[in-house]
Length: 585
Image 1: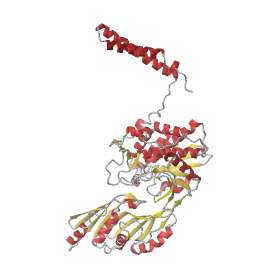
Image 2: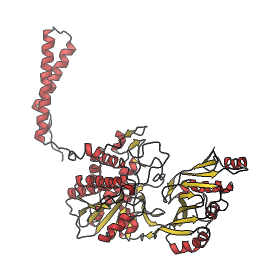
Image 3: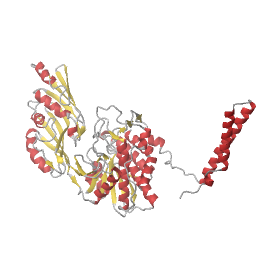
Image 4: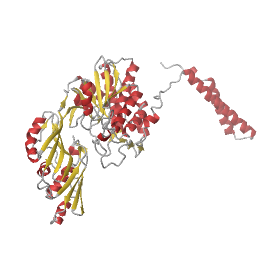
């Protein structure tokens, strides 16, 4: 079955890349302003969902749009075990710092760039083609599926997961599955997620007029800014302090003066809130700069966070630096800041270890925070998720991973939250391989093309095992490298753009059926060969007539024409060719 999977995915490689390109061209960011019945999270997310479901239909998997919140497509025998494959079509905002178009597919230096390339549109499309490859492998082997695969496409994963909340009111979820929204080998442990909003309402201190930064709690903010009222005395001293914070610790701090005001802006580096150490938090740095300059006097909440958190992300200053051997350390991210005068709020993302709980975090954090803030509101409370490493699901996925990578599968933990935690026995499974930088939620998000194609093969292999219950003949296994796409887009600097208003799939694929190679019969091959050799003889005769009428005397030209005629003659009558060959044993 391995050979069938390989050939199928290589034959459909261009189709898959074109389908992914069309998905990346849709800016499917949550937009409540354009929400409507059938598009509860905005028109662009609804458009992305319809697009992906069009692909599943074209690939032969009838799809269903469930109230605009979840798309699904199913293959296999539903009387057996049903396995979910959970992905999502919504993305975080592009943000700043891109050197390439965020909502277009760019292939450059062996990588596919675009918002959603790795999180999670690329993997979502890949699972459709993986399931099609699994179906082809079963058909080629004459094996009927005993179980079923349910592809599920969410629409609010990057925000509050309202899509799955609505879905689960009316529909049940399978009891097992995986989500291609994390890392290889197998993510069996996901930290708990606690998002809180700290609010403060008090008299302004006369210096800080406003401050703002970030747009999503689950993203390390790359930019933050503040407006300071110019003090009646000591302006130069204040500016000297602010200038002393320029260009340090991976941050860029800029100050500009205007009439009665000083503008301060901080640029850091974005990252996913689950890995805040990979970024530079601009809000934390801004608070530290303002505190150093004395601007936060009389604003206890902001001053407290500047001194206990700042750019630190382990929770040590807050007294919640929890840790376990299964999932590692707690992390803290100052995600969104909005402040005017003495009133404002700050949203904080906390990822805590699987052996901890919300209660253990808030029991320490609550008293100190509430003493400084007017209110603490819980925005999100998602418990940790853990699957036994000895479960049958992990054994099946580990087998597929090992067969294609020749590496020993192991279970790992992440701080990110994936749809896998919706199902008791579900894990996050790829598409990113260890050792590669995490680019999701940051500028120039990308996935290595080789990783994308290898992940698709691993998914197809795992799906075959899930559909058959693991009963199938062993086949040749390897991690193919380089893939055919390397020939189309070699490792030099090559750029291919797909415009935002162009959907390559709709133009180049959905108007035609999938290409199928025609294998000629012996009679067809013989007929084509006779036509070719007859053409050679005619060419030789015409050449000879031309040389005769022009009194050609150069022997080598007559000799070449004669050879051409003899080759055509022998080929036409099959002298010494297939008819005299013995068939292969």
